[in-house]
Length: 135
Image (cartoon, rainbow, N blue to C red; front, side, top):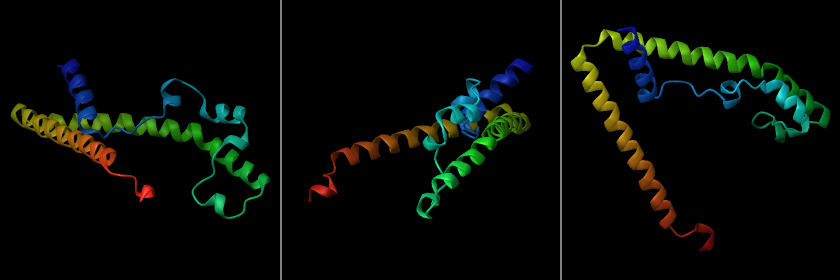
């Protein structure tokens, strides 16, 4: 029964898309802060709009260093959130009857199919439209 619940939880999390995306560096065990430090501050990115306020090189480097110092902690919290959401989804699904679970799965599958079709339709339409710059 527990193995089934684990499978159901995994499937539900995947189907509902509520799991937080964990950065690949966290998945592969890389230390993001130290990896960024090795690259050097010049290769980091500052937050939105910071590039437009006239930061000096020293300020830019300090901002990037501050961001890097929080990176590992934030990655760990994202992973913890994803685990909690998975457990929550398992507990919520445990309240449902088998018939309700089946109906939910059908609804989720239909929504995913519709979204996939919309994405493919949007891509094909944008590929067929003439470039605005060419006008």
